[in-house]
Length: 496
Image (cartoon, rainbow, N blue to C red; front, side, top):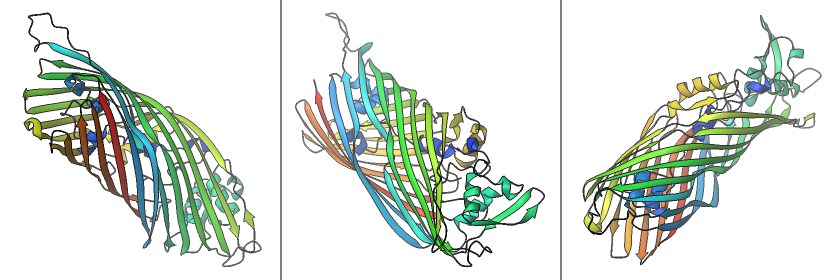
């Protein structure tokens, strides 16, 4: 199964309602989140492991909190615009979605070491700083539309494959045992074509070259509340730790429509009768979890910093409520209204661990350059606490892999108050054999006066992706997507 497969909850081997839910693709979707950050760090491509001194450290490398010598508060709203172009059998369609969100809100309390008169104030633990932050770590908002004429197969082939899992007679093909096969048979999209040792065989009753469309609307996101502490040891070594409390909300509505013609069934459907079929799938997912981060930054000389951080897996508890239905009508003939089938599942997800390493080089008061390398073990995702978890974990092992991401960025000081920033991130694709990497290009400005600052950042996120509206044993219909997300962030902050 492939990422973003619209029918991802329908198991190719399932014949009972309880086993319909497959969550390996949700595991990937909910594991591709980012550390929350301010506009400044967004602008430098999130290459901040070794930078420190920014409120993003609360949700990133907590060792960076040790660089603060004052308390600070900031808020970062964001504007997101998603644009998706989908090519399906040579026809290209586009759709878009825009929304406002709160990207980050952070508060840091500085606590300096009390030094007796006459003591050395530059050795030992010099501070213990504490931070709180709210971060939006993932956005699911997007609209997708694709359309084309399929010369190879139809959704009837998908329903026929589901019906062939049942065996026995047509009486054994019923809604409780296999609603997809049952729907296809009852609405004449498939028909019995013979028998084998296991029972009836089914095949699509639909002709080729049907008009197919797919409409998807998604909303929701993932957020994280962090509690962090960082310290400075002798202005050389900076250490930190944080605990993250996470939540996710994912809503997806998908409708696949097909308009075509069917073969004749005596006394039932006329030869070449035109049909319209709508297959709808709705998913609502809620979850909460916990993780922790450990970090360090070492400064061998004033101009160079080395950083490293470890992010534990997030341990999620998730509730999933889904429904699917099929509605088919024939021009001048019978109508088969939608009869939704609902199912609910609770399960646990362990996301990948992450390890970051970085270096930052500072050029006195003129600015800095920073680079990060990030290892993410997507093959280490694990699902549990439901009957199909073993099969889904095998799919995770078969379909996904560990990746190495790279980030680079810098900041230049144009005058005592104005800063220019730019960055780039390469996020490798964890899927085996399909889709592509994500590229993030960013740039921004910062203005500081007294204790107040404002930072603005523009970010473009692009990637290519392959999805399959439905999957069958023969060649599944394929759509190639080009994603482009335009995001704007604005941070307002005060030191006190």
